[in-house]
Length: 131
Image (tube, rainbow, N blue to C red; front, side, top):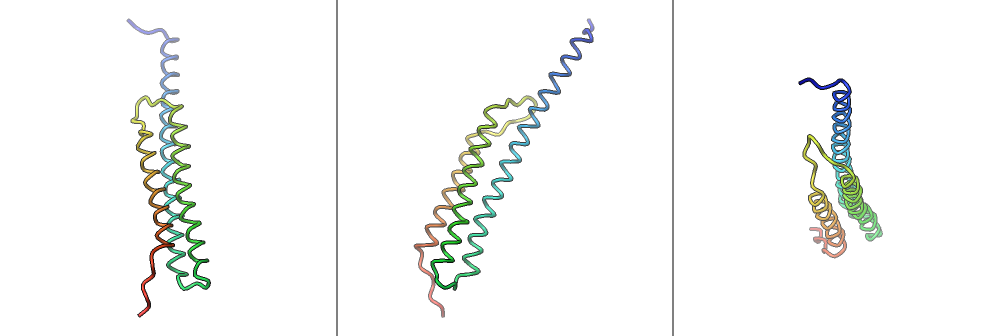
């Protein structure tokens, strides 16, 4: 039994729509990964600034600028998962495996918590005396 051309056309249109939604899921996942890279870059800039300008006078200024970048990285990581999870909740995957929102939340939480701990360590750990 052959399908009528109308049904075949509808099936193709549905399949194209499903594939478009799958591409949107993948784009959301790539966007999340991009924002996580940006978070790591901000944290790295903070560490680099502190290492480069460790002898800065006054000493608290270098720590302050580094802290801003490190905490900015934490905020970016948390914001990335928030936006990605909202988008993923609206989408349905069809032919691909959709990333789990819980995994994105945990990863962002760990990066954010690590950045906060790093910022605190920057202020509370003593520097080794110069020899």
